[in-house]
Length: 316
Ligand SMILES: Cc1cc2nc3c(=O)[nH]c(=O)nc-3n(C[C@H](O)[C@H](O)[C@H](O)COP(=O)(O)OP(=O)(O)OC[C@H]3O[C@@H](n4cnc5c(N)ncnc54)[C@H](O)[C@@H]3O)c2cc1C
Ligand code: SF4
Image (tube, rainbow, N blue to C red):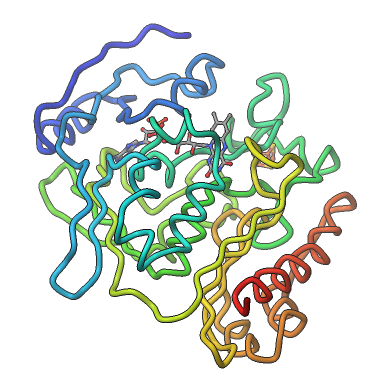
């Protein structure tokens, strides 16, 4: 690990000022992703700003009937929160499908959104990787690509986004709230938060340098059965090959988003119009334009079957 300096921010303003002042600075929350990447020298921050003391550890009801989730709320606490379990079941289920109990005890809302890809070539510093080292190439193209994206990828990068929580937030139409180094605040719809790789896969989100996530806002609850289905190689402690977050009403209409298939949670308006007709029609719309590699075409069938199982869960 490279040497770095460390400070504990006493206020949000102090945290963003420190980030703006120090090139190469990074915020650290639970540390469950960032520290691993630092040990492998994939991330080499010169300065760490600990944001754990900023008071963003509360879940509060908002005036419009929604919920404001502090950036530092631990995944375990969020999944167990009474209103999340009652009104936003898809979120509780997605959180509990992620990682392990120990990791969820440390992992935070903001850190989960910003966790980096699990592409094995990104983690192997002997391999070409445009995301880790822009311009070096992509070893996954023509390499081992069973877990990679079938949607939204580019010639520069075919990695998926690994978060389960983000898929549920997408189906709930969440907003990400931030504080910028100049003191201004902004709200980023979750649909626009993660970016597709294009020619610059190293830029993964809409955040600007030094921008701090303060909270995630959920709108008022959406009527319907909340379902999260995750298919993975092991029953626990593994990332999604395919996941489905869905909210389905009695008449079969509703919302659906996919995880494990694209560089961001994948939601398509046309698929929701097809949802009452069943999994096959909705899956076809979700997968429009899919470009699998030679090794991950199985994900196309898996999407339809996982969606079918999710819709069956919603009916029972
Ligand atoms: C073995 C293993 C298995 C896992 N399995 C799953 C899984 O199945 N599903 C899943 O979804 N996840 C899984 N995870 C990932 C885990 O959920 C993430 O590591 C965790 O959510 C990251 O949160 P953190 O608070 O520890 O982030 P950190 O590691 O502290 O930070 C991650 C990133 O977020 C930035 N950051 C943190 N807070 C802020 C803030 N407030 N504003 C701006 N930037 C910020 C940091 O600078 C860093 O870049 C797994 C992890 C491991 C190690
Ligand atoms: S898929 Fe993306 S993360 Fe993986 S090796 Fe290629 S550029 Fe790197």
